[in-house]
Image (tube, rainbow, N blue to C red; front, side):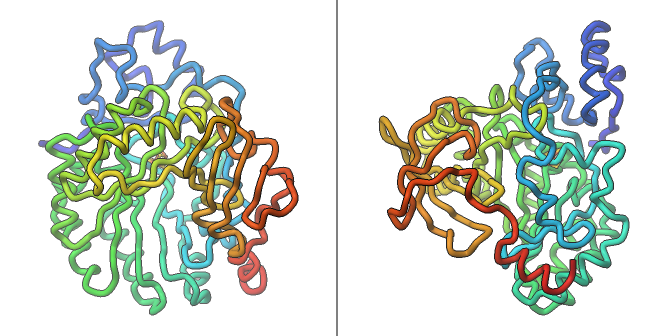
Length: 390
Ligand code: SF4
């Protein structure tokens, strides 16, 4: 199969009517649009609620004034141009602001806006920062999608990272295997590059499949090629209304991933990013969906955690009773919070941790306090950053 062609103008989507194109232009004037002929071919255009369509085709509901552009406060953890350091062992290197298509619910949609300059052309300062911070053992290449870079460019990035002794893992955060698996199938030098660098470090592909219909024969072949080359592949997906917020769909996704050797890693609560209200599922409803989906899966398929990438850390939703919701810090900006349990009064409308007014009980059974009083930023990683680079 030939490489797909890219479409960035909604008027060039032949399956949409003239009036749909006109109304959706008001959305694409605000939030960037990008898709490709391969991914478009997965859509059932006779179904207005088709889940693949919902992932990639704009929706006027995005114009609702809900959420913020940087819902996880990434700007606060940006320690040098293009590099974020929130948790001590892991740094994020933003290597591009292009993707194989722009998911409508993306939490980094700000990067695709004309006036955004968060992704630098030169990753030199980011590499320097990583080199100077021996606590960083994991580097996540992200953006944007690193697999939109040429293999030669990606190879240069990996060469610089593998020259740093304390970097043991490079993660490649990518939805390309879903959006355009031909990127892997039609470029033999890409798996070869993975094979070459896997001799020195561990390369993880952090895949992003949201719906079982994305797991086409082409996608499965691309996954096989990357795995055969030595990459470890895991999957993370946000829980998206109208895409995978159905236990039957989610369990099929998790099970199928496990059948083809991909470990389900995280199911994310959709971040309250500007324009994302129509894609978000209330947390407690989401917990029910994830739990029911997991109950239908094999042990290997149900390994994923349901988490929220909050400003203060990665918070896992671990249980609920009639009146309470139980969460636990899986990762935290302040290391003292790792493992901390939160017992919250149920709020069926809550879509983010901040929507819960009070923590009923903290790990230490200490005094009740407001979520908003929990200090973001200036955590362990940020403190060590401010003492050196900044
Ligand atoms: S591929 Fe990832 S970074 Fe790109 S638009 Fe989709 S969610 Fe955002």
